[in-house]
Image 1 (spheres, rainbow, N blue to C red):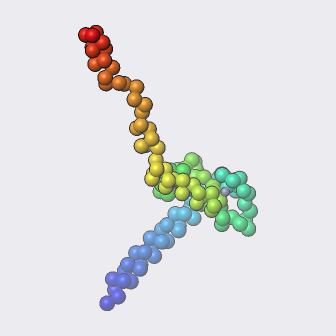
Image 2 (cartoon, helix red, strand yellow):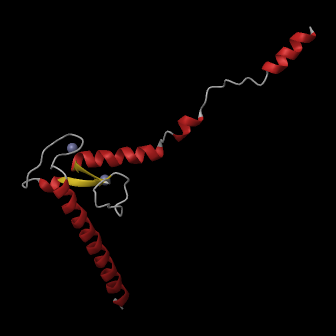
Length: 120
Ligand SMILES: [Zn+2]
Ligand SMILES: [Zn+2]
């Protein structure tokens, strides 16, 4: 009866483990590559509080882990939070709509007014 349930649990457990391993992999590499300093607030970290220093993906794609570390940024948990909140806001209130609004430089009646001026 709970065969499906345990199958699902196994899948979920495997997925959790995959995510944890992947994260441990790039986190370790990023920590070896970069100084233990938050990229935003420049807070410094030691082994004692190192778990509060997290790896942020600049393009927000956790599968994009180039070996030169160019997609990683070390951020403290607070700044990391802030970074993601900002990204969500960008999507929600993005500048796309703003850019579309252009000043009306072209006046469609300009030609008409000239034509009428000539007549009178
Ligand atoms: Zn920070
Ligand atoms: Zn991030």
